[in-house]
Length: 171
Image 1 (cartoon, rainbow, N blue to C red):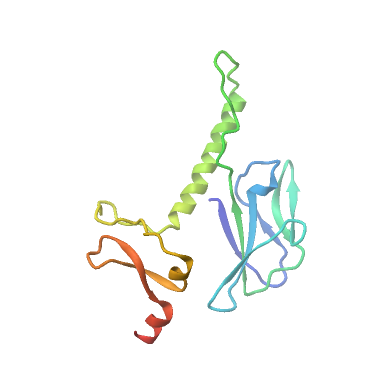
Image 2: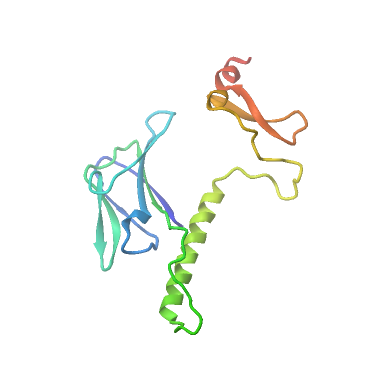
């Protein structure tokens, strides 16, 4: 699974990276903290060297080490972000090396796992529900600001709905 979430405690600075990732390019690991001290959570992307380092074991990092321990109200989120590119080029009459093919298949498996995790977090309609058009009409940023998304009167389209304030006040 390409995402792992830990609870900060104000003392622990080390958090394991339990998943496989492409070694050599540390940009494939993203580290966030999510402050859960209020109901409006704040997620912050952390910067390597500024906020944390990656501690190696063998040929690849296996631990995120924060410079300052995350607070007890913080979640630490470690994410693998595999590039959606093909690193191996196959040519006619060229050698077909098993090691190159295995690396390409491993990369593809990581890409599928990353996309599967992202899709699992998406809003979806039920299988067999062909009546819903999930494409939003174009609205300006001002029209969308602090608005909800609602189904149209027939239940087959989406549109901009009331503001969150209107919902809370019952308008």
